[in-house]
Length: 438
Image (tube, rainbow, N blue to C red; front, side):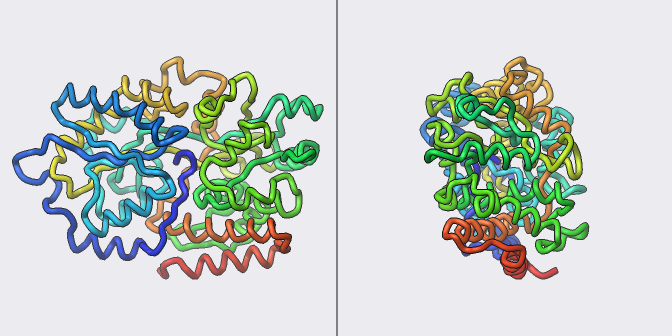
């Protein structure tokens, strides 16, 4: 997922989605009538520094698609804070777009609703074949063993970005590689009104991404092998506490970050207020905020010890954006043509270059534009040390309830209230009670 997507589900729950989807939705099924409309509606996710930036990137490509096919694409760029809620509402009402972007972590949840077109072999063949896409991206397109609910569009991974001048001023020669080193380094940087590490305590999805990685490092997955919520294991509790303790105990995150939402930590970093930030594919955002490439460095996100790798060496989730088609579109053929266009080698190079992300299409990924100092570490992480978030139908609810628990713990830390193993476990128990019973 991108820029980080705050999954504010509100009162719409997946159980409602499942019920509504079973009752039908739009005025026609996939394919609709024999007469195909010449217009598609497209909900794009906010990938750039602003909605306007996205429109400037995408509209020329949509115009190109219209010129090639005669199909006009009506674009709406949806902020991440609204996107999941909009999608869930559309699945219940049947009044959604033809094509949409989804955070790849939502794939299994939306797949369970039945609202999205399954990408079986025939549909993949229509866009050039499934084998065009890299395995790590395909691993976040739905439940294993089922036809994917979406097609990979943009791939990302987390890294540690650091401000070179702030490091030099503090006499720090190398970025930290472990969490202990990060805390030690962070205490040298947190002074004179500036802080070591940025966070976004009110950004539910970012909270989940960070504690999922820390959970893997502590041997926790947050779900059991049979898909049951497992939020209160020792590893899960340790992961959440370690993350919140960066503010509560280690004091290297500003208390005000407890209220930060989408992209606010990146703004502080670009303005030399914060020396480090853990983020996914952030170079394009830094550039848009006036920060030169020479001003920042990039390193693998920290691990507990040793080098990044699989299992307890995981240091990133498999981040990314998928492209999906609503099952009740009246123009399924046109929608598939649009997906084929957006995932073509040419468009993949152009779009991912514009956004500073990595193409999930193998041929496009070989372009030299994705071998830069800013992107090579991310490609390495995706290939060797990233893990997909649990591909379970309840994943979006997990993001909401556990992300909220972390948000509340950050609020406690900011207010000076103690954050203990017991208080963390209590918040996670409350979150687990809100999950559907299996």
